[in-house]
Length: 437
Image (cartoon, rainbow, N blue to C red; front, side):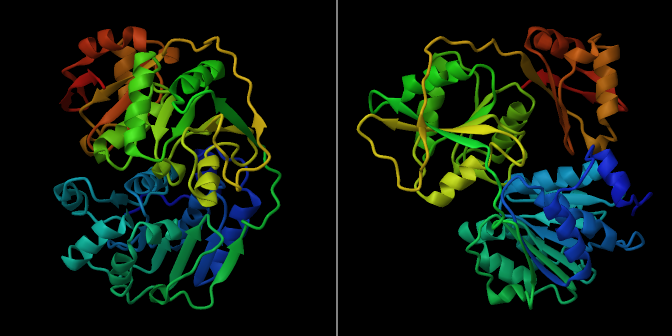
């Protein structure tokens, strides 16, 4: 299963991480030596790596079955963790399964069982109930963002899954929430608790209030985005209908953006995030679904276009900026006669200049109809764009490689020409379609 098992130092070098933070160091030490662990730490502090590094050490390279199961509340988090495991280059196979994609894809990928299986409780419960693989070798269970899984109603599925895992000898539960109640079915006996939510971290988050002269805050939003220039950020709304309204108004004002909500098809949500990550879109309009568990870059700002309904929502949204050691700003929108909730404190009034200083969109995203299952690598894609596309290194943006496709950021000025030039060319042994996304 594993051709070359890498140690922690090699993995960190590959991830370009020079030093673990105190939470990660403590978590690794405790998880390695303890059967049951609760890890509490704020969003963006590196919990994923904190449980993956000790997990890799427990895996047996000679075992052909699934050895570790990671349950997550959302497909986006499943995909994110899968990408982290792949980027670690440990030599162990990993797969993520989740609702919203064809079951046939799961069955193809699971013909050769991974050492690590990641999934949403609904999809994992489906595989379990249909006995699609043996569970006898699953020794480690990780419940990531456990409180969120309970919030979205996965308790019965998790109960069903855990009852079918008789050979567990290690359980790790993570959360970014302090008030966590662990149900008895988890069987988390005498857990060691690592709590970094109590740490007095000096926050570098600045909260600013943006006052709209009218109830309709759309023009004020456009003014603020113009004032912020070409920084990337998330505009949070409470409702899908609000996202549609904001998106329509930004389109009218030629502000490039992507949308993200539970009402979108999974494929469309994934592509919105890809375009946001690679710079094609610098604004993401989203519901609170985007406040946790997404693989998105460090942001300079977030905007509460609609006021959060709870203190917890406010905290999780703000967690998308000013993460770890970085600075960031949360802009809170209100109209003149509106009162802010009590939990929004220490907010200063923002002064917005009306002059728009945003530069035109630079990147565009190309879709390629071939991926990992076709033995295609990022290097193969880069080679195609350099040799046949005749572009320079500066013109090749972020490459995201999926199981059956890939996405490449290129300058918008040459995107159509490149797509036409590279369409129906060969990557490895596969003829691929190349189109503008």
